[in-house]
Length: 355
Length: 238
Image (cartoon, rainbow over all chains, first blue to last red; front, top):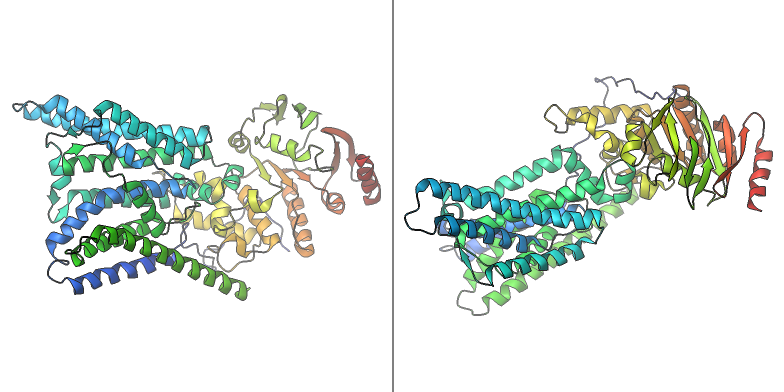
């Protein structure tokens, strides 16, 4: 046996060497999700050829799925860390209220100078993102330093943020003076701006996860927080950064919502939290942490949006459409979870027979 | 190490470790040996006392401090503390040293990461066809090599091994002992914590017996034999 060196001599590069495909393992569930998405699209195209695959409908769907998609990315990050963020929607609404308040205060007069309007828009967005940062910081502190289980910590802050928003607005809507309408309803060519923001966010987060030390540490900590601690990973700082990132993404979603409907209300989109969690799980993010990719989340968002719009069109005459939509989402979620479970069991069985 | 104390775990521990030396620490479970190791690694820092490395006082208040002082720790419980079982062999090897594998932009340099991994897999003879397989797919001995290489990659001056061959088969055990001795020969100071008396006799230069948080006796392996050591260990129980 050759002796072991504390500093290995570099291996001969011409020799065959083990390959590391990627630090993040690829996942067969993503391919499955892609197939499901395509099948859903084809099914509704066949069922409603005149209304479903039209440019108008595609654009409407793209707009609707962007804000929920960004919220789902926020939840996905916290899920990768082994936690969850229930306060995403409260953060988004608080952000929207803040931005709308700034816009109203600075540009409510009809003769506002264009320079002031530009300044107000910049300030409103900055203040909104600032609020998101602070909300994330609060969550991160409670989870990383006070060691409160994330589901309880963010349930608490969700209620707190909603409470702050309610006090500030007395429960009423605040209007954005149509200053952000272009952001919510405009487009770059055929591409709606919200969709563009959603895709850029997904690409950036995906890059952070696969190519930065923070991303690597997040996956490792989510897999086994004890081992990551013993490996010298600073779990607290990873958690803190994760919740801050989640807060900032929620703020971006909040600003898009304000742009799209030109109003901010603290109780807007209450179903978004559970929907975002469902998208994550559907997209292959492991709720116990450490596994999952952004590609899966994006595909899950698209799949659910196709399903919901498609069902609305197919059951247009039927007053029970909304009821049936939730039913269909639930069935899809459980079906995909079961498929993943069985394929994983199959894989484990294969692995153990190979040995 | 001077007068190292953590109330409730250990008291007044004094010892020194030379570079290239293998120091054994043994004692019954609960004698404070693991607590001492965790204190040296900054996991649960000692309440009082000083640690000097190469004559300089070292402040070790966290695991990050310990790593900065070039201390590595192979934990007792490999499966929960040492390894990320579901993650790839490669990821496990680079976890503690990723900082040194970033490019000038601060992003992970994939080519360099792959080289680092391949180097360690070859160096420690980790038997696998593909380093992207999860660590779980390896045998106990090979898993322990992955934990070792994770720390060796960090270029340590002090390596603390807590139960280095627990749950490892006999053949691999001898190979791991050989690896430990090789590393000491290259100047790393090594602390082996173990109840395995033949293991201590085979690897260590000196052995400390701990009892109720204190050092009961210092021995050199030349002065003693397995028989005498196991008698002493048994006497500690009473």
